[in-house]
Image 1 (cartoon, rainbow, N blue to C red):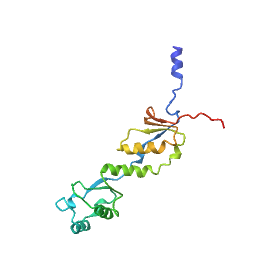
Image 2 (spheres, rainbow, N blue to C red):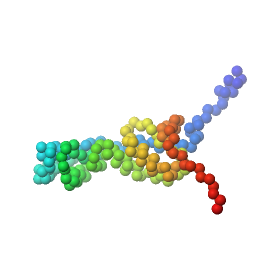
Image 3 (cartoon, rainbow, N blue to C red):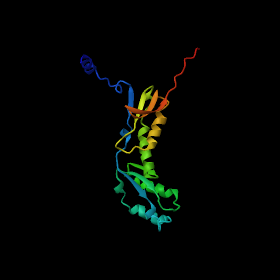
Image 4 (cartoon, rainbow, N blue to C red):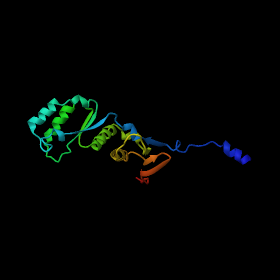
Length: 182
C-alpha cells in the first residue's frame, strides 16, 4: 500500500514539453480569402480560338469587381491555342481587384499562396533547433508547403521531424562532426 501511495505522489513529467522541440504549424501560413478559377474558355470564339477584337470587348464589359479580395487562378480548359498576351490582359483587368493572381490551376494558386507566406520565414530563427512540422490541420496545406519548409529549414536545424510532438517521423538529423585537431 505504501508503494502505491509513493507512485501516486510522484510528479507526472511531460517529456514532450521538456524535450526542447519547436513545433511549426503550416496551418498558420494559410492565406485567407476565397479561391476562384477564371477559365477563359467561354471568352473564346466557339471555345476554340481567340478573336482579339471580341476578346478585348468581352474584357472591357466584364464586371471585374466580382473578384474583389479573391485569389484567382487564370486558366483555359479548352483545347485551344491561346496567345500569352491574352492571359496577360486578363491579369491586368484582375489586378485592381484580386488579392492574388496566378496562371494555372487552383492547386498552383494554393502553392503560390503558401510560397509567398513561407518566404517570410527566417530560417536562422530555427538555428540548431529540433523542429517538428505539424502534420494535421483544419485548412488544406499542400504537399508543396511541407517540401518547401523542409528544404528551407534543413541547413539550419539540428533535426527535422513530421507529425505531432508525441509521435513524429524523423526526416533529418544533422550529423555529428568529430572535432578535428588544427
